[in-house]
Amino acid sequence: QSVLTQPPSASGTPGQGVTISCSGGFSNIGRNHVYWFQQLPGMAPKLLIFRSDQRPSGVPDRFSGSKSVTSASLTISGLRSEDEATYFCGAWDDTDFVFGTGTTLTVL
Amino acid sequence: EVHLVESGGGLVQPGGSLRLSCAASGFEFRTYSMTWVRQAPGTGLEWISYINSGATSILYADSVRGRFTIARDNAKNSLSLQMNNLRVEDTAVYYCAKSGFDYWGQGILVTVS
Image (cartoon, rainbow over all chains, first blue to last red; front, side, top):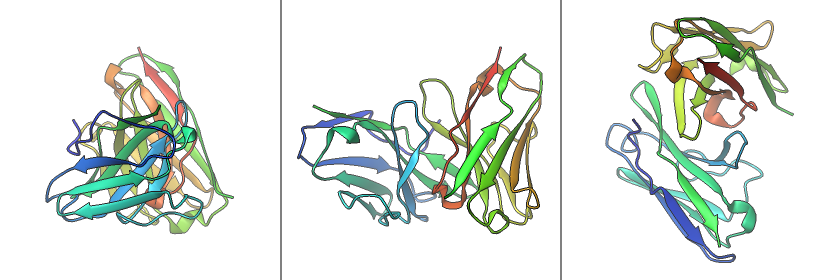
């Protein structure tokens, strides 16, 4: 059972912005950096954000992350059809790494 | 270019064993920690094990501790996961991932039935 809670679904139209939340606690998000992953159907997850707000090289700046106390957010601006995927947050929680419940994004 | 390729999956009966391998290339394997993550059909991601670069720090999720063993061979750029006493609920796609989750393998399916 995941300790990081995400909304099960989100949606937006092309060009819009959307924000996905990730709610945790002091033992995980409160003390550690947050990761965000994108998983396209049938594919392996891909790292989008590390250290709560850092993008790996090659990830468009349309993707941004933030953290506040025990919650985090992933914002996608200028939605594109290829952003349709499931997004997971994650963070270390003592000696375990915990993933969020996942949010499926639909681009209408 | 970083490549991670899992192998060793398949169908096994409950109580059986399997050994997964992850072949790494394109980076200095011996200097990075590695992780195994799994995903049961239609569900989310579950972290299951971590090993640091020198294999001096090893972590397991409660769900696999005592049944799974992570190991690495830095001379062969290889990561492994020995899975014993498998249960139906271990059925999943298993991914190996490089330190910081910046690179993932394509995943390998393990079916316990």
